[in-house]
Length: 356
Image (tube, rainbow, N blue to C red):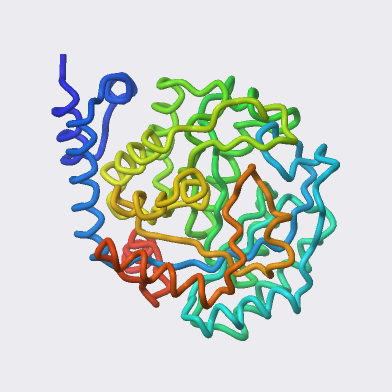
């Protein structure tokens, strides 16, 4: 039987494990294995990106959502959520502030809000690109049809984040009500790749019903998809959801999986997520030391930050953006890293463009 040390070394060299091997590694790894994995992941990230950390400006522009996912604080059934939508002027003001602070990527994130027409979102994307042509626009607005994704791309959007959440169909139905389906979720991700987006997938760690076997399926799906970005964070419960009493996902397991993904997909853009920072006081720094290379500070207006509450105790600091960036620079410098002003396109996408 192959030991965990040998499995980590195989992952480092070949960037691939079988389902059975993933399960063995997840079930049997020990502290010494964790240290080896983390060291290799950090070395791999530095070999690809140096000690530069890419910064993304997160703009949470609507917390309306037509869906009723069992884990999400802005689910349709949460009658206590204070709903809001930012205007185009609000969003452009966030971009203006972010650009001045050195942000060259803006992430427009929101629920699946049927009150914002797709054409309106296209106009927003075009307006941002016209004002800031050297910046990337990332969308995170859920499932759409192929033609709608194409219209977003044609308007100038560069990237799209759509976490698959779980690659196991039974587990997916544990987390989502009908008519949402894993089949459609995956189809959306493949559509986004075929259109030409830089695509981000990912999953929660410790979500209700998750097992080593389902995590192994997640990792195999990421291996197949070859996304440009992977978002992994711990499951954190929200008091207005059916999962309110479930325990939070493990920070340690999240860090372990970040390192696994870094070795499996060396070129991937890998955020140290807000959820990780919310679960642990120095979670973002730990994530970077485990192989992450992206952080996403919040550029949303202070008036709405506490309203975009996907889970309880989410980081929504009262700092002004300039202060937040200054603090982030200090915390990264303390562990030997620095923020990059580059827009940070995926190396995989850059290679694909050269080939074409």
